Image (cartoon, rainbow, N blue to C red; front, side, top):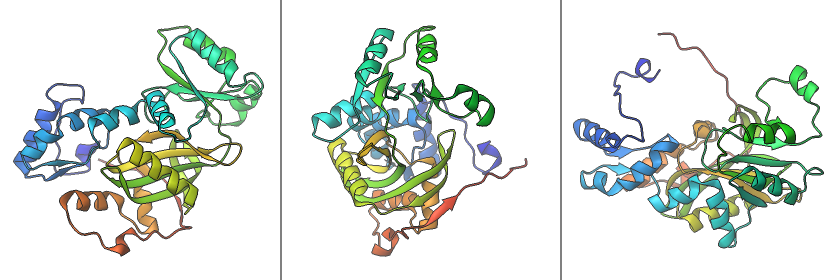
Length: 304
Protein backbone atom coordinates (compact mmCIF):
# COMPACT_ATOMS: atom_id res chain seq x y z
CA UNK A 1 0.00 0.00 0.00
CA UNK A 2 2.90 2.34 0.70
CA UNK A 3 3.54 3.18 -2.94
CA UNK A 4 0.04 4.62 -3.22
CA UNK A 5 0.56 6.95 -0.25
CA UNK A 6 3.86 8.61 -1.13
CA UNK A 7 5.49 9.68 -4.41
CA UNK A 8 8.89 8.16 -3.48
CA UNK A 9 8.73 4.38 -3.23
CA UNK A 10 11.49 1.76 -3.34
CA UNK A 11 11.04 -1.99 -3.33
CA UNK A 12 13.79 -3.51 -1.19
CA UNK A 13 14.87 -7.05 -0.20
CA UNK A 14 13.40 -8.60 2.93
CA UNK A 15 15.29 -8.09 6.19
CA UNK A 16 16.64 -11.65 6.10
CA UNK A 17 18.20 -11.17 2.67
CA UNK A 18 21.98 -10.62 2.70
CA UNK A 19 21.49 -7.71 0.28
CA UNK A 20 19.05 -5.88 2.57
CA UNK A 21 21.53 -3.46 4.19
CA UNK A 22 23.34 -2.88 0.91
CA UNK A 23 20.08 -1.89 -0.80
CA UNK A 24 19.09 0.53 1.98
CA UNK A 25 22.55 2.12 2.03
CA UNK A 26 22.43 2.65 -1.76
CA UNK A 27 19.10 4.49 -1.41
CA UNK A 28 20.48 6.62 1.42
CA UNK A 29 23.49 7.64 -0.65
CA UNK A 30 21.34 8.34 -3.72
CA UNK A 31 18.84 10.50 -1.82
CA UNK A 32 21.34 11.99 0.68
CA UNK A 33 19.45 10.55 3.63
CA UNK A 34 21.05 11.30 7.00
CA UNK A 35 18.88 9.24 9.37
CA UNK A 36 17.11 5.89 9.04
CA UNK A 37 14.36 4.98 11.52
CA UNK A 38 13.54 1.23 11.44
CA UNK A 39 9.90 0.40 12.11
CA UNK A 40 9.89 -3.37 11.56
CA UNK A 41 11.15 -5.78 14.23
CA UNK A 42 12.93 -8.10 11.79
CA UNK A 43 14.98 -5.22 10.39
CA UNK A 44 16.43 -4.19 13.76
CA UNK A 45 19.17 -6.79 14.01
CA UNK A 46 20.61 -6.38 10.49
CA UNK A 47 20.54 -2.61 10.95
CA UNK A 48 22.31 -2.83 14.32
CA UNK A 49 24.94 -5.17 12.87
CA UNK A 50 25.67 -2.75 10.03
CA UNK A 51 25.33 0.52 11.95
CA UNK A 52 29.03 1.40 11.67
CA UNK A 53 28.98 0.74 7.92
CA UNK A 54 26.15 3.25 7.51
CA UNK A 55 27.87 5.73 9.84
CA UNK A 56 31.00 5.62 7.66
CA UNK A 57 28.81 6.91 4.81
CA UNK A 58 27.31 9.67 6.95
CA UNK A 59 24.05 7.82 7.67
CA UNK A 60 22.84 7.36 11.25
CA UNK A 61 20.57 4.45 12.20
CA UNK A 62 18.08 4.94 15.03
CA UNK A 63 18.63 1.53 16.58
CA UNK A 64 20.11 0.00 19.74
CA UNK A 65 23.29 -2.08 19.73
CA UNK A 66 23.16 -5.65 18.43
CA UNK A 67 23.69 -6.90 21.99
CA UNK A 68 20.74 -4.89 23.30
CA UNK A 69 18.52 -6.02 20.42
CA UNK A 70 19.33 -9.67 21.13
CA UNK A 71 18.22 -9.28 24.75
CA UNK A 72 15.12 -7.19 24.05
CA UNK A 73 13.74 -9.27 21.16
CA UNK A 74 13.87 -12.64 22.94
CA UNK A 75 11.25 -12.53 25.69
CA UNK A 76 12.66 -15.40 27.74
CA UNK A 77 16.22 -14.07 27.45
CA UNK A 78 14.98 -10.59 28.37
CA UNK A 79 13.19 -11.80 31.50
CA UNK A 80 16.24 -13.81 32.56
CA UNK A 81 18.59 -10.88 31.95
CA UNK A 82 16.46 -8.42 33.91
CA UNK A 83 15.93 -10.81 36.82
CA UNK A 84 19.69 -11.39 36.97
CA UNK A 85 20.15 -7.63 37.18
CA UNK A 86 17.72 -7.28 40.07
CA UNK A 87 14.75 -5.94 38.09
CA UNK A 88 11.35 -7.46 38.87
CA UNK A 89 9.67 -9.51 36.12
CA UNK A 90 6.66 -11.86 36.09
CA UNK A 91 7.18 -15.45 37.23
CA UNK A 92 8.21 -17.28 34.06
CA UNK A 93 9.46 -20.56 32.61
CA UNK A 94 11.09 -21.40 29.28
CA UNK A 95 9.32 -24.28 27.49
CA UNK A 96 11.13 -26.09 24.67
CA UNK A 97 8.83 -29.12 24.56
CA UNK A 98 5.33 -30.12 25.60
CA UNK A 99 6.49 -31.58 28.91
CA UNK A 100 8.17 -28.26 29.79
CA UNK A 101 4.92 -26.47 29.03
CA UNK A 102 2.89 -28.77 31.27
CA UNK A 103 5.39 -28.50 34.12
CA UNK A 104 5.40 -24.71 33.80
CA UNK A 105 1.59 -24.63 33.96
CA UNK A 106 1.63 -26.62 37.19
CA UNK A 107 4.36 -24.43 38.70
CA UNK A 108 2.30 -21.31 37.90
CA UNK A 109 -0.73 -22.66 39.77
CA UNK A 110 -2.80 -24.29 37.02
CA UNK A 111 -5.64 -25.35 37.19
CA UNK A 112 -6.52 -22.92 39.99
CA UNK A 113 -4.72 -19.96 38.42
CA UNK A 114 -4.70 -18.81 34.77
CA UNK A 115 -1.36 -18.38 33.04
CA UNK A 116 -0.02 -17.02 29.74
CA UNK A 117 2.29 -18.14 26.98
CA UNK A 118 3.85 -16.57 23.89
CA UNK A 119 6.70 -17.37 21.51
CA UNK A 120 10.10 -16.20 22.71
CA UNK A 121 10.54 -14.26 19.47
CA UNK A 122 7.39 -12.74 17.94
CA UNK A 123 5.65 -9.41 17.59
CA UNK A 124 2.19 -7.94 17.30
CA UNK A 125 0.65 -10.34 19.89
CA UNK A 126 1.17 -13.29 17.52
CA UNK A 127 1.05 -16.54 19.48
CA UNK A 128 -0.01 -14.92 22.75
CA UNK A 129 -2.73 -16.70 24.72
CA UNK A 130 -4.20 -16.67 28.23
CA UNK A 131 -4.84 -20.22 29.43
CA UNK A 132 -7.85 -20.69 31.70
CA UNK A 133 -10.46 -23.40 32.13
CA UNK A 134 -12.84 -21.03 33.90
CA UNK A 135 -13.80 -19.15 30.74
CA UNK A 136 -17.22 -19.81 29.22
CA UNK A 137 -16.25 -20.95 25.71
CA UNK A 138 -19.82 -20.73 24.42
CA UNK A 139 -19.97 -17.13 25.57
CA UNK A 140 -16.66 -16.42 23.82
CA UNK A 141 -17.95 -18.00 20.64
CA UNK A 142 -21.35 -16.32 20.44
CA UNK A 143 -21.05 -13.11 22.48
CA UNK A 144 -17.58 -11.74 21.74
CA UNK A 145 -15.73 -10.85 18.58
CA UNK A 146 -13.14 -13.37 17.39
CA UNK A 147 -10.00 -11.50 18.49
CA UNK A 148 -10.12 -12.79 22.10
CA UNK A 149 -6.94 -14.31 23.54
CA UNK A 150 -8.30 -16.99 25.88
CA UNK A 151 -7.70 -20.68 25.27
CA UNK A 152 -8.35 -23.80 27.33
CA UNK A 153 -5.47 -25.89 28.63
CA UNK A 154 -6.59 -28.92 26.60
CA UNK A 155 -6.75 -26.88 23.39
CA UNK A 156 -3.33 -25.37 24.01
CA UNK A 157 -1.70 -28.76 24.61
CA UNK A 158 -3.42 -30.21 21.54
CA UNK A 159 -2.21 -27.41 19.25
CA UNK A 160 1.31 -27.42 20.66
CA UNK A 161 1.49 -31.20 20.18
CA UNK A 162 0.41 -31.04 16.53
CA UNK A 163 3.65 -29.58 15.11
CA UNK A 164 7.26 -28.81 15.91
CA UNK A 165 7.26 -27.19 19.34
CA UNK A 166 8.26 -23.49 19.22
CA UNK A 167 10.29 -22.10 22.16
CA UNK A 168 7.76 -20.46 24.47
CA UNK A 169 7.94 -18.27 27.53
CA UNK A 170 5.22 -19.32 29.98
CA UNK A 171 4.35 -16.65 32.54
CA UNK A 172 2.05 -15.79 35.40
CA UNK A 173 -1.15 -13.97 34.46
CA UNK A 174 -1.11 -10.29 35.37
CA UNK A 175 -4.72 -9.18 36.02
CA UNK A 176 -4.19 -5.43 36.45
CA UNK A 177 -4.27 -2.48 34.10
CA UNK A 178 -2.15 -2.63 30.95
CA UNK A 179 0.18 0.12 29.78
CA UNK A 180 2.11 0.89 26.62
CA UNK A 181 5.07 3.16 27.29
CA UNK A 182 6.76 5.17 24.53
CA UNK A 183 10.32 6.08 25.49
CA UNK A 184 13.20 8.12 24.14
CA UNK A 185 16.58 6.78 25.23
CA UNK A 186 20.13 7.91 24.62
CA UNK A 187 22.60 5.02 24.94
CA UNK A 188 20.92 3.58 28.02
CA UNK A 189 19.90 6.90 29.59
CA UNK A 190 16.22 7.83 29.65
CA UNK A 191 15.37 11.15 28.02
CA UNK A 192 11.56 10.95 28.06
CA UNK A 193 9.13 8.30 29.36
CA UNK A 194 5.48 8.59 28.25
CA UNK A 195 3.14 5.94 29.71
CA UNK A 196 -0.32 5.49 28.33
CA UNK A 197 -3.07 3.34 29.78
CA UNK A 198 -4.44 0.89 27.23
CA UNK A 199 -8.21 1.00 27.72
CA UNK A 200 -9.20 -0.73 24.49
CA UNK A 201 -7.25 -2.91 22.06
CA UNK A 202 -8.06 -4.68 18.80
CA UNK A 203 -5.71 -7.44 17.66
CA UNK A 204 -3.03 -6.16 20.03
CA UNK A 205 -3.23 -2.57 18.71
CA UNK A 206 -4.25 0.26 21.07
CA UNK A 207 -7.34 2.06 19.77
CA UNK A 208 -8.26 3.85 22.99
CA UNK A 209 -6.14 5.05 25.88
CA UNK A 210 -5.06 7.78 28.28
CA UNK A 211 -1.67 9.37 29.01
CA UNK A 212 -0.87 8.91 32.69
CA UNK A 213 2.07 10.20 34.75
CA UNK A 214 2.56 7.24 37.10
CA UNK A 215 5.95 7.47 38.78
CA UNK A 216 6.39 3.76 39.51
CA UNK A 217 6.00 2.98 35.81
CA UNK A 218 8.42 5.74 34.80
CA UNK A 219 11.10 4.52 37.23
CA UNK A 220 10.59 0.87 36.22
CA UNK A 221 11.09 1.73 32.53
CA UNK A 222 14.21 3.75 33.35
CA UNK A 223 15.70 0.68 35.07
CA UNK A 224 14.98 -1.52 32.04
CA UNK A 225 16.43 0.99 29.55
CA UNK A 226 19.62 1.41 31.59
CA UNK A 227 20.13 -2.31 32.26
CA UNK A 228 19.81 -3.31 28.59
CA UNK A 229 21.43 -0.16 27.15
CA UNK A 230 18.57 0.75 24.80
CA UNK A 231 18.73 3.66 22.35
CA UNK A 232 16.29 5.75 20.32
CA UNK A 233 12.52 5.28 20.30
CA UNK A 234 11.65 2.31 22.51
CA UNK A 235 8.29 0.72 23.34
CA UNK A 236 7.74 -1.09 26.65
CA UNK A 237 4.57 -3.04 27.39
CA UNK A 238 3.61 -3.47 31.07
CA UNK A 239 0.80 -4.79 33.18
CA UNK A 240 0.11 -4.57 36.89
CA UNK A 241 0.20 -7.71 39.04
CA UNK A 242 -2.33 -8.74 41.71
CA UNK A 243 -0.50 -6.49 44.16
CA UNK A 244 -0.43 -3.54 41.74
CA UNK A 245 3.26 -3.85 40.85
CA UNK A 246 4.06 -2.91 37.23
CA UNK A 247 5.78 -5.84 35.49
CA UNK A 248 7.13 -6.28 31.99
CA UNK A 249 5.17 -7.95 29.21
CA UNK A 250 7.60 -7.24 26.38
CA UNK A 251 9.95 -4.69 24.85
CA UNK A 252 9.72 -3.30 21.33
CA UNK A 253 13.19 -1.81 20.67
CA UNK A 254 11.75 0.50 18.00
CA UNK A 255 9.01 3.08 17.50
CA UNK A 256 5.63 1.53 18.27
CA UNK A 257 2.69 1.95 15.93
CA UNK A 258 0.63 3.97 18.40
CA UNK A 259 3.50 6.38 19.11
CA UNK A 260 1.60 8.77 16.84
CA UNK A 261 -1.04 9.21 19.57
CA UNK A 262 1.50 11.08 21.72
CA UNK A 263 1.10 14.02 19.31
CA UNK A 264 -2.27 14.59 20.97
CA UNK A 265 -0.49 14.90 24.31
CA UNK A 266 1.94 17.46 22.90
CA UNK A 267 5.08 15.40 22.18
CA UNK A 268 6.53 14.23 18.88
CA UNK A 269 8.75 11.35 19.95
CA UNK A 270 10.04 10.30 16.49
CA UNK A 271 11.05 13.92 15.79
CA UNK A 272 12.86 14.11 19.13
CA UNK A 273 14.73 10.88 18.33
CA UNK A 274 15.89 12.30 14.98
CA UNK A 275 16.96 15.60 16.58
CA UNK A 276 18.84 13.70 19.26
CA UNK A 277 20.65 11.60 16.65
CA UNK A 278 21.64 14.68 14.65
CA UNK A 279 22.85 16.52 17.74
CA UNK A 280 20.18 19.22 17.45
CA UNK A 281 18.96 20.94 20.60
CA UNK A 282 15.67 19.86 22.16
CA UNK A 283 13.82 22.59 24.05
CA UNK A 284 12.15 21.82 27.42
CA UNK A 285 8.77 22.58 25.88
CA UNK A 286 9.19 19.75 23.36
CA UNK A 287 9.26 17.29 26.26
CA UNK A 288 6.19 18.64 28.06
CA UNK A 289 3.43 16.01 28.12
CA UNK A 290 -0.22 17.00 28.60
CA UNK A 291 -0.96 14.31 31.16
CA UNK A 292 -4.55 13.15 31.37
CA UNK A 293 -5.07 13.43 27.61
CA UNK A 294 -7.24 10.58 26.27
CA UNK A 295 -7.39 9.33 22.71
CA UNK A 296 -9.47 7.15 20.42
CA UNK A 297 -8.24 5.90 17.05
CA UNK A 298 -10.52 5.11 14.10
CA UNK A 299 -9.73 3.80 10.65
CA UNK A 300 -10.59 5.52 7.40
CA UNK A 301 -10.53 4.36 3.79
CA UNK A 302 -7.76 5.09 1.31
CA UNK A 303 -8.81 4.97 -2.34
CA UNK A 304 -6.29 4.45 -5.16
